[in-house]
Length: 283
Image 1 (tube, rainbow, N blue to C red):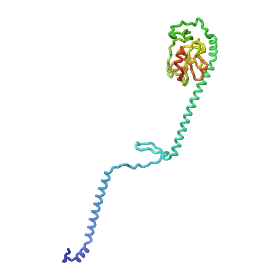
Image 2: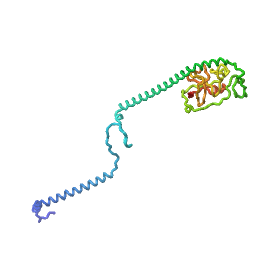
Image 3: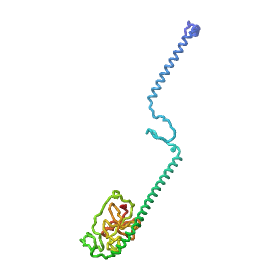
Image 4: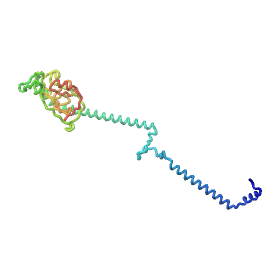
């Protein structure tokens, strides 16, 4: 409700004549209040941001080259991994290098095997006098012609207990003999590889004769006598399954990587059968 006695024209004139300093002071107060409001708002926003959880962080990217990993939480990125073509080339180069190395190892093994064979042949050729002596002894001991001086008393018939012709078996047996065992590595034996090992006795089925005389002229003996290929001179000592044997016999089917072990009876030879075993040669 307007007051009829109030002079509004005079009021407007008074307002218009308000001093300049008073208006400036009012403006300053207004600016200060706005600044305080802005500071309070900034503080509230900052506190809110500090309470917010951080789910990640930015890690600066380095140069693209293969470098050592100094901290386990970072993963090194190689230049090849960013380019599949380069990675494939690396795999091909590695495969070629592996194949070349395997081929080189095979060639070295083949060369070592050939060298061992040449050494055996060389050693065999240097023993011509031994061969001649063997022939003379073979002529001296004819088949089934054993002198009375070489006769040996036959033991019980339950099995071969002494060397000589066994009437029950019908062929010569080497009698009992104690096997000799030794560690090939401990005695410095040469490894010849894996050979085919067979067995035989002195019967007609195995030897076409039954006198027990070996090609070297020695009498067969269990746990001692083996028939080896001609590359091995008579008297060569071999270790098979840790047991010591001596090459004193030959055979028509004994050639290549094959050795025939003598057993007293045909049944023992059959029980042994055919095996593939590591063979060592004593120096």
